[in-house]
Image 1 (cartoon, rainbow, N blue to C red):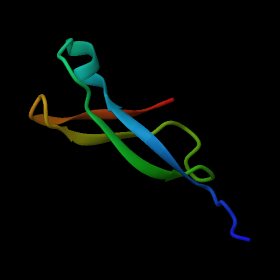
Image 2 (cartoon, rainbow, N blue to C red; image 1 turned 180 degrees about the vertical axis):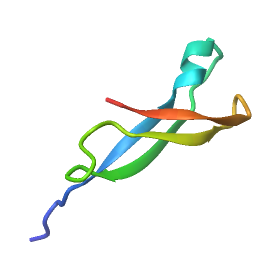
Image 3 (cartoon, rainbow, N blue to C red; image 1 turned 90 degrees about the vertical axis):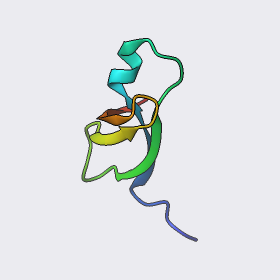
Length: 60
């Protein structure tokens, strides 16, 4: 039987887009190692609606 492991899927959401009031959302799905990274992650990703690179934070 296979073990589940420590890797989990997380959703990253744009913080600037959320505060701007524009329609739609910019979200990315990625994985992280729960054992090594216990806190929420922040990555700079491209937001296609705003057409620039913004900070995306892990939600939920």
